Image (tube, rainbow, N blue to C red; front, side, top):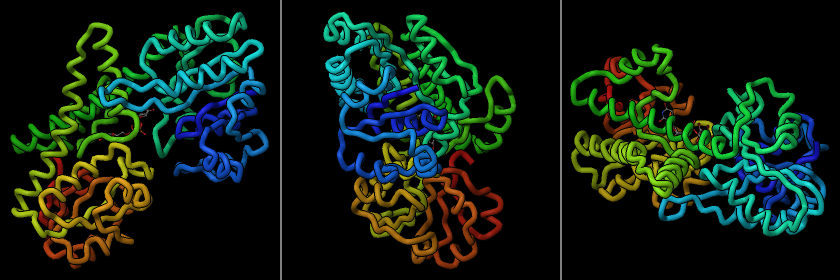
Length: 426
Ligand code: UDX
């Protein structure tokens, strides 16, 4: 099929490349000239394992342009994957979606299926429909909701081998088109109405974030009681109704989705007449866990003023260069406020980190960070940190103290090696 994808950000680009991999011809649109120029040379403007290879492999089925009209003229199906950032109020800012829809309507000359791919609050489909109706003057169209569940770092696999594909439609025609698009994918396809599809996305992400905040709250109780949250999570996770995934205690969740989606879901629930206070608590715990981590450092190191803190890991999670809402930002700012000097290393996120954390010293590897530092702090669980030469690190540190914000090491082993080890809830 011919498909247009508007927006070459994370979601749009992965969606475009994967739809091409499924055999479709895809016209990818972005208003940013520089991005499109890079993409024409098959260089992805974001870091995602496998994306470059996928673009190269499917280059004959991929076109890149800055004009929405090229996509609308060339394809009967248009996926909208533009940004829906948070406004100061926590509401999703849907102005990019509205602008794109108006532009699509302005250059349509026959039936088009408009697919919402960006994460949007429930009832956005309805609003897209009314903007279209006002502008297309009688030309037939359908709207569908097809939320993405991609995780950064494994986005391609998540797209091509998903747990499920969720599609909200209102007509048989739209359903048939969507069925055809996803035919090569062997996963259950959930066809539902548009509003339910929209809520599936917000509810799924909010549920996962709540699961993380839940285990982080349990980690606080474990610390107070002298229990071990890793053991607790293992014991809970073996119950198949609970499951062991997203039950890792740490310094909290970040990224481009969870923080934004929870607040958008809370705001839309509010507007509809229900105060979703559970989600407010999920957010509060996520802030609290970072504060407590800095407090633990103050307790052990006493005065942070003038101390050199070696930080390993800045990205909000491993295998990505994404710094959006990364817990490292709040934690490092907390340390800087207390007068500490921070030296840091991340395998891929340092370029982006320099923009949000300009005051810290960036180093070339783990050992440069450890050299002369008063302690080591792990904020992202990259494999290279798990496999570091721990003896060498110990010799380089001024004092052998590790604050492990992702529980990648075991307390007993670290203590045997002569470290003062402080994890989360262990
Ligand atoms: C998430 C959703 O998983 C995905 O379905 C959606 O489409 C986009 O948002 P992503 O933001 O890429 O994906 O990251 P994810 O792997 O879900 O992790 C989110 C955050 O939670 C990270 O900061 C991670 O470190 C944290 N996390 C995750 C925990 O602290 N503990 C866990 O057990 C799991």
